[in-house]
Length: 87
Image 1 (spheres, rainbow, N blue to C red):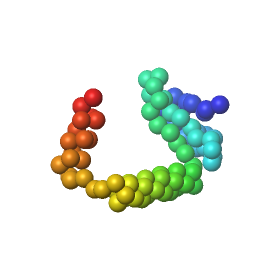
Image 2: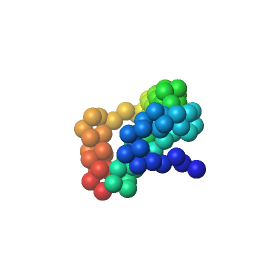
Image 3: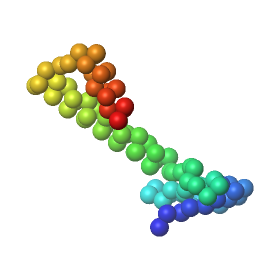
Image 4: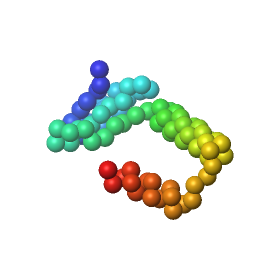
């Protein structure tokens, strides 16, 4: 179950920080809506590393596909991206 607190709980920030551990972040709300997540630094570093690994894997796959099926010009790529974002 997520640990959700009002941002005003930070008045006693040491109590809030004691509740943070790997796999157990504290979510802070402002005006009833989720606003912040406080996570353990080890978990943050792990998440950041996994995102970089995923990005490089996606880039490797894109390069492989481009080499297999052919590269397209920058103008064609821009037109394609603009078409997607216009939807």
